[in-house]
Length: 282
Image 1 (cartoon, rainbow, N blue to C red):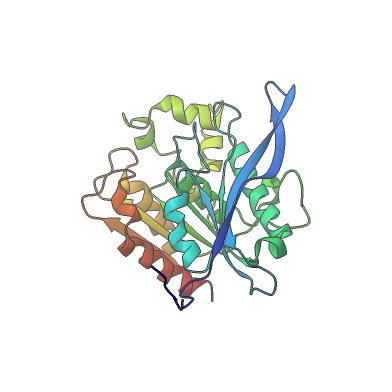
Image 2: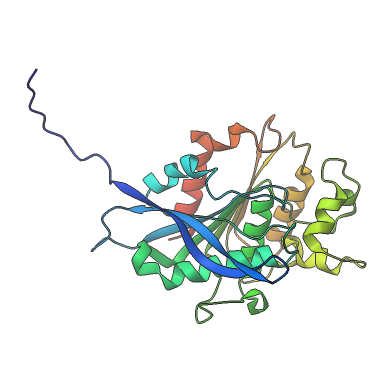
């Protein structure tokens, strides 16, 4: 059968750049080094392409495991909406305690800004977005935007601030007494993440709740009302503190949702996030 077909271009063709090294760090008792990598989704044809906003995606995993690959299919929704996507890996707590993960995320922001032309992104419109432990780190990226002490490594001529945060059910208060008593967030996971912390100082430094300032960008928080891993009060307290500080913020509680369930990645939620980002990234 012979056919002739006239095809209308109904969407932009995208490409993926996988395993892009954004930072090299010490490894194995400081005797070796390892590369930290990111996956990117970006326009296939970038010459002459307008710069677009970027989502820096941070995967969760109880601070002890991470995957830059796991969420790539779901992130396609945002790529189709006109965002450059960068999904990163970072040093986990079994390697190095806090602030290593935050330092890595900030290094990723600086790397993206330094390569804005290559990746077709607007360096002034980078969104930190993450789930669970990744939500914790994303929120910290937002609340410590003016803190240079966590900026280590390369591209220090660029700042590591972001323009918005989307936090999926992350911990915002590692210092809270209720956290230490939780059966579903074992204390050893928190101790591994913060490192030695007899007076709770490091737990506060690792908690976005205590780092809010006038420089904090707009924040959207999404949490399940039936979360048995991260207490919904974590997000409610974070939201109240943001509101008190006069920071543009939204809290969305998902009916019947437990920690990390698929309901968070449905079209209705994704469209809500895109609407929020459209409003705050103007």
